[in-house]
Length: 184
Image 1: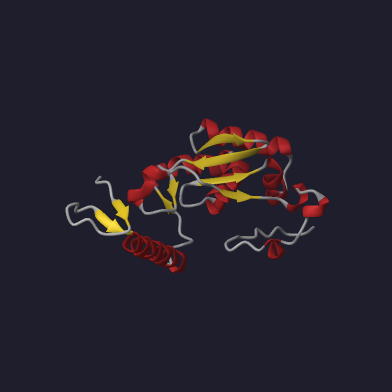
Image 2 (image 1 turned 90 degrees about the vertical axis):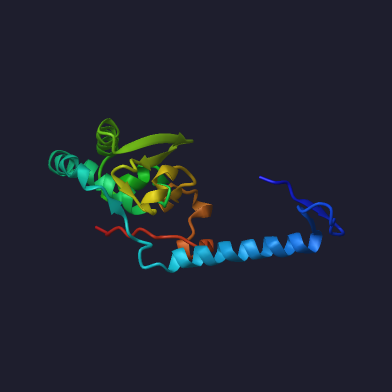
């Protein structure tokens, strides 16, 4: 990669020399292209698609039949994961969404880890779940090798301090997804 020389005036003896104005224009154009790419991806009809490798059908059938709670957790994680196959949430979130006990979550996560469906990394008291990208992935298949972070973060309102218990609409994020749970 060539080094670019940026200065007040263009140096005709250096082919990698550009002016500050040219560099600023180049950076604006690059930013515009990146924003257009993000918009195309956001507006794509495939944005909510997840790809699945049929080579793992037997393992998925085993999981669904023998460990239905673990299967439900895996489907929740796959639904929430980003294009890097990662999602971050606490056990409390999983308990509330799936209406199961902490012990059920723990044993189900162990089944998913032991069978190679997920890897679990710690971030404070929350877990970062990396879904096995040879089974599921949300990006183009040629980007599967990028199964890394940043991660989508799923928060439970009930875990937040009272002063922070705002409705998700009041948070003001550009991109979020609310997960609805049925009331008893």
